[in-house]
Image 1 (cartoon, helix red, strand yellow):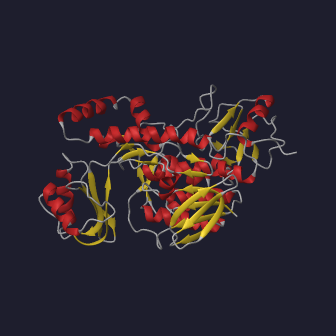
Image 2 (cartoon, helix red, strand yellow):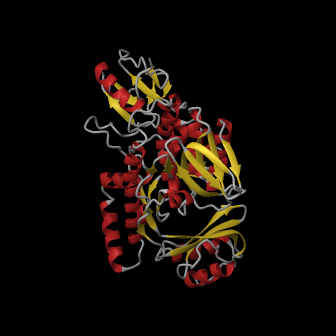
Image 3 (cartoon, one colour):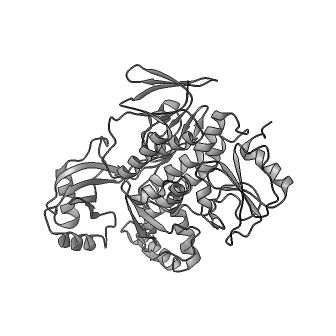
Length: 475
């Protein structure tokens, strides 16, 4: 029996596979497509996702394939310099096309020992007390202890489970593609700058190798949205908005996306779970979709591994839904708000001007920006220190830095007192005695995802908190 089947080899599924392999879990990734997509639907990583790559020792390989861009406030296109003293050591947006992210995460998952089967489409699903049976289009039946649907907004797993996906359907569609243009770059830049004064959903920008990424509102919502738009449709819509089609030709790929906003009613149904776009979809404003999925996987991976390995305390796996569902709901709300503020109508534009004024106040701007880059996420762990429930940034230590100690995906007790102990949990929690000038607490217990589970210096309190996240002590 396979431990976990991951359906879908996008960024979410790949991140999850890598996380599970850190704990020795047998992982099989199923993907219906024979080859990875060339479509560049996402363009980069926000600060929290950059931190995640650093926590797992992947950041250096990512940095070699992208560019750091100064972090600015782009909420609904309101361009403001980033406030000072953000709670991260990675205060930038990392530009990297989605295919490169997929390639790097695939390499990582394979190196870690994940198994892949491409060209295998899931068509049936059933579960019992002992596991899950997955039926494939070629007649193959696979058996696993758990299965996770990371198979996108049209998730087959979610549909087979019968999990509700309430929200708003697509009302506005946008064409997206990569192609060559037949006019000088200066002409493109000048025309685009003029059009974007009134239509912020419009854009042409270089994507390398002589190609341009073209984004233009469609005429309506296609009857079959799985059919890619033709080049002629791009030309017509470009002429409507810009008065020219820029001589676009030789498209490498084309697609369309909508403004549907939906969220799965539950992220777990027995032994089957949902993550990434299978659990939530929203307009791409703010670039949060890929990042949200990576962060889902980072939250779920260690919990599911604990369940498979047999040490998970009661309720740990259910905490995945309890923690991540509210985070996605908040992202859906912010994208709804941004979509409204991009409208050229007088009412939304009046609200937009007011919000722009409010964002002159540093704390207001910080609050909005930390939502987008996800460093402001705080899970509800109950009453306690202000760090409780938040992820800890990469603080410098006397003998290195914090994130260098999190590569193995284990819990970590950062002990500045030298008087505490994790005896009985050494197989799940690392005990590090070190000090940091930036950390004003005696000791902090971090979960494998870096969120602070306890702060203090009392051994009895620590012994009370350890079982909540790391199960019973070893005999």
